[in-house]
Image (cartoon, rainbow over all chains, first blue to last red; front, side, top):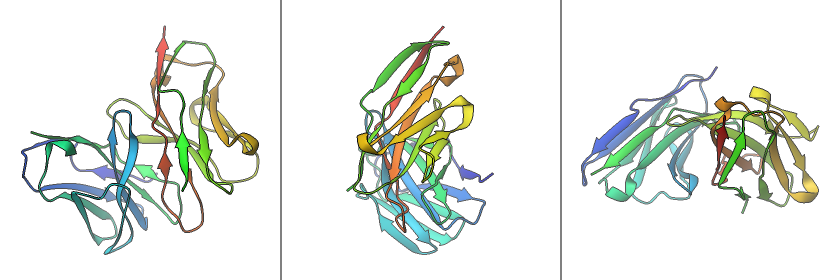
Length: 111
Length: 114
């Protein structure tokens, strides 16, 4: 089975800090995705990547950037964390299609 | 643009009762359709998917879903709910082709009473 691993389950950061959320997949998938999940809003796509060094904005990219230097790793970066970025962040990957496999999530609290 | 509506925010059923979670989508052609389940504090697990063919699809944990083109629906069903089914359920749609993105509904939270 594909495994998608998010390095941290819980993070607490201060306002203004630069935050890195890491995601690694072990099945050579081309596509990787970052979502945020908030109560009542479902999952919203922040960014996705379809190849190394390639990225596209999702529905809510403001305040975020991403990095994909290696195929297996996709990082989400909060350049200057704000309290409205407190959320659950989910990473996913897929192989040439829509069937996505998700990690367990990182719950980020910005204080 | 594709969209997904899950009309029920929260559903409560008794253990052993049948379950139907509703999902309606908006898309011009036949989309790819998915149901995911999320237990508290966890990521999403795929329950089942529809790409083409038989409109009644079977998934894991005894779930099934039926694609109805005329109603733009993809409702999830289970004949007898177990307490361990308590979770949040998400319907998702993809337009297929080279578009890899999923659009998710806002989710339905299922509570199971003993």
